[in-house]
Length: 359
Image 1 (cartoon, one colour):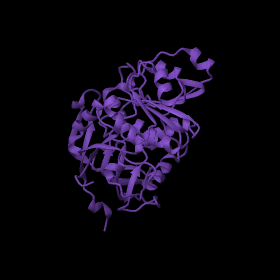
Image 2 (cartoon, helix red, strand yellow; image 1 turned 45 degrees about the horizontal axis):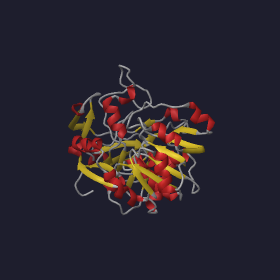
Image 3 (tube, one colour; image 1 turned 135 degrees about the horizontal axis):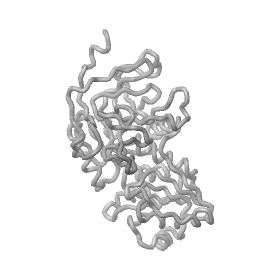
Image 4 (tube, helix red, strand yellow; image 1 turned 90 degrees about the vertical axis):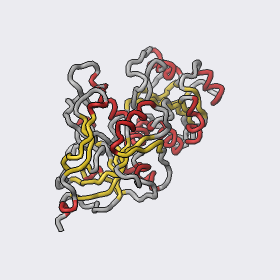
């Protein structure tokens, strides 16, 4: 039987029609179901996680004041676009040149889509749900190299918490060369990336100091932080000394930025490393260059993950070395409500939307 005979020609999808408010998100029931090319896979989406990129793109945050809305990499945005990068689902169809996957397999999708001829060049990477349609829909197409089979007892909505948050966190820790000899200060510790950083830094046997809101302290401590401090501890050096015995840390893993940023830099020991993958409290910060060069600090940004990192995460999941932190799940039709809850930041972990109630 022709496999396309079992795939509906139309599907449900959320189409982002431009930058602005949530009114620019339109729920469609007549969106064309994509057809996989020879090197691609059609995946039935069971669940898709939310992340800051979805919100930033919709709001035009990456445009930096320019009149033309742009994507995370500065390229021009194309509308309409189906967003959603964190896909968990099952294989529906495989292209004729895809050899390692078969219909029915449970899969996760690596959201960083690399150039086939130059896969190690971050300048040629695209992001699922940004430069091509993503997972806020019944189905999605992705390059077969990005579709990873997974053996796990976790539900689809639990699996949909991993891709972006844990991939970003592992990339940050790689950039900062974190080992068991380090003390790591993590900002935004209750969010998706922050909570992933805690687990992945613990996996490396590092000591962890987490910053988060007071109402989330117990939940963050339960994830594995050795010390949990208020989001704005006032005298950060004193708070570190009282909780960890030293005013200095080896690594700052930051997704917050904002007005408290200079205190983070002052907390770094000589030779310390700062790594950043977000700026939810504000992208503009004040840097005293004397703190940078007189203390031999290293600053890195972490966005595009390298080839091989996602496969590493899949191994961690299958081995039970990291666990999902599912804060809430919503039906696909409720994406706007899910995004409002995500923006309010009252949760710990990740929020996902599902295409069925039993995933």
